[in-house]
Length: 284
Image 1: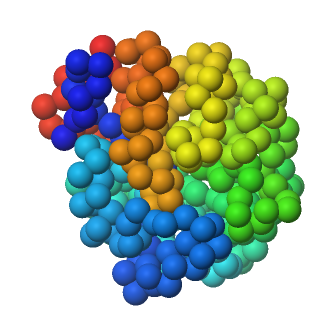
Image 2 (image 1 turned 180 degrees about the vertical axis):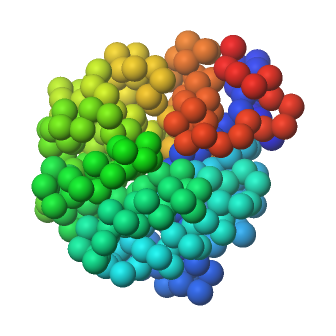
């Protein structure tokens, strides 16, 4: 159900959520928890994630799946398509650039009805403007599929940032028709560079991990300087509690219309999921 913010019930869509197949969820979450030092909010399963989202007042969750090794895509994308059938969930697929035919898999992702593609430069070991990825970017642009990138620092690769803001801006310039989502507000722990290279560019941001890592004043300033239709609520659940993400965003004292759009309608417009039952059908 919606959350009560500034004397108004507002719908929320978390545009950055991770789940794992039940057989590997415990192992995957345990490994990442050990590397990051973060206590996870969920056990990583789809079932518990749905329960936790409801408890936090999240009306819709966008699930970001990652093919961490070549050859995983078909299984991952099939599972994503199955989770995509659940009410209140929208799943993205993934490809690995070293697989035999990642471009064909992009087209398959479209056929499966998935809402976009998730790429993680750190886990998949590529720099965001590496030309080997360009055929994938071009295919996604042709299919109208957004690509969500992990952007900025990551504990998995602490000494090499694979998607720094300047290089992300380079990709946006080369592929103007590609819908690029740079998670963690353009670059985790690199927000000075985000402000320099990415604000005002043709890219989307989500707020994943901002509540636990970013300065309110800087993020608020960047929000007010960027395209208001290209900013979305994100938590990075299970690594940040969505309730904290929502509360943090609402504490920025943004104009109420802008807050409404960031909390729900911008993600709904980008990923194309249905509005909650009883909604007026628009952000007004």
